[in-house]
Image 1 (cartoon, one colour):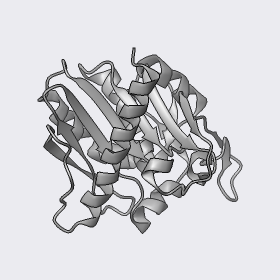
Image 2 (cartoon, rainbow, N blue to C red):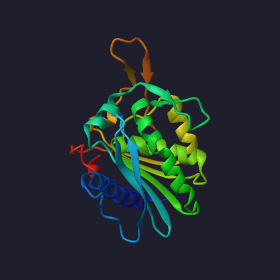
Image 3 (cartoon, rainbow, N blue to C red):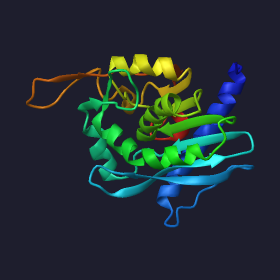
Image 4 (cartoon, rainbow, N blue to C red):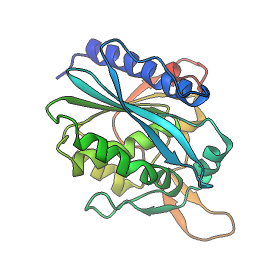
Length: 231
């Protein structure tokens, strides 16, 4: 069990790692700063809603741990995915649950690459999954998938400014699979309140229900919600 101080130190470190996913996307050569004693195992490519493949993060490895990090929204196509808030069955767990269609489609496009890479790495190492904003949604989907379908059965999830990802059944299933989850949120960040708990498509009667996954580590100060370190 990590102490509160250790959890906070890990949260700060992984927030900095998340920041580098934006550098990876912004730099034409895909370069970013790799933490000391870590190496790049793989870069994550995912398909946006209009079938454009983009860098969405990376997988790092050190002698003792592995980090899977996802980028948040950095392009118009990502925003389009964000607002496709209808739901689809999350087919990577046996439980009957629904997740955000846009988030799930992006994650699914990268899944085989992520799973293939992790299969080559030692499951004796601690595994951390992290992301900011849209990346937090992808990290949430990835963490439960990893816990359910790989030898890494106890991943640690650290998210920053995460939106709601799935229905209450998904949240319940998530609790079963991912036992170490830290959701850092700024209450003034509108992303953390989306999609609404009850979402209805325009001109349609069907309603979709959303619930945050546990746990919540709140930030209460009025900071810039777009910054990784303040979400």
